[in-house]
Amino acid sequence: MNFLRLFARNLREGPYTEAFPFAPAPTAKRFRGKIEFDAETCEGCRLCERVCPAGAIKMERTAEGMTFDCWHDTCVFCGNCEFHCPTKSIHQTADWHLAHRQEDKYRMVEHGLIPFQVCTECGSKGLATAPAAGSANPPLTAEEFQHVKSLCPKCRGKFMRARKTKAKA
Ligand code: SF4
Ligand code: SF4
Image (cartoon, rainbow, N blue to C red; front, side, top):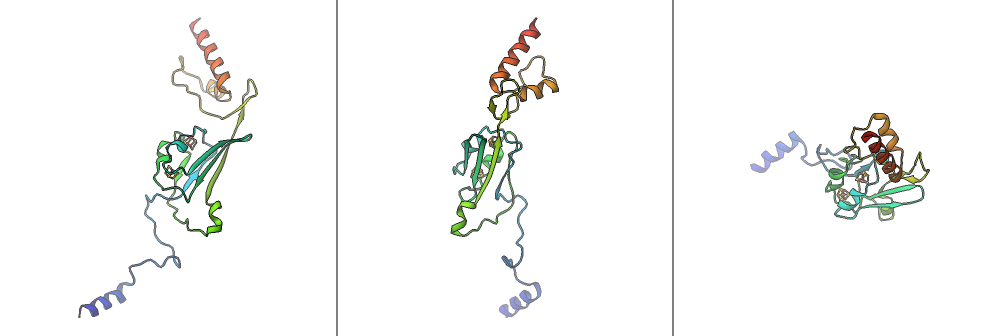
């Protein structure tokens, strides 16, 4: 009797399981999946590489800039990198479609290149990091901020020292 009731209910309501891979499977909104990287906003601080418990992120200085690689098949989806990134350049998507063939394992990587900028003062190459403007007194104007941003660390120091001396005089 129980069986017949169950059978009738199943016929009425349909299967409980998803038809995946023949139909899309729903994904929870806050699902922690594949990592996405934005080289445009990244400042190359390498914090993500340091906090990654799985060693899935590797960054390297090359002649063109800093390379970023996140290996999807090594990542354990903990979200540490996204949490600690100061520029919000790493996002965990809800994409879990990471099944792959053995021969494709070296393609399971999110790759990016953070290009070096050329210092407008001395011409040396370096990462375009945001200036630490918090301690500047008086505060940097928008124009000064952009100028400092275009400088290498050495020229930034020089500019800030000269500015301080000028402000005191
Ligand atoms: S989510 Fe966790 S394991 Fe994956 S790359 Fe980020 S820090 Fe590493
Ligand atoms: S992604 Fe974020 S944490 Fe990683 S190097 Fe870039 S700015 Fe730093």
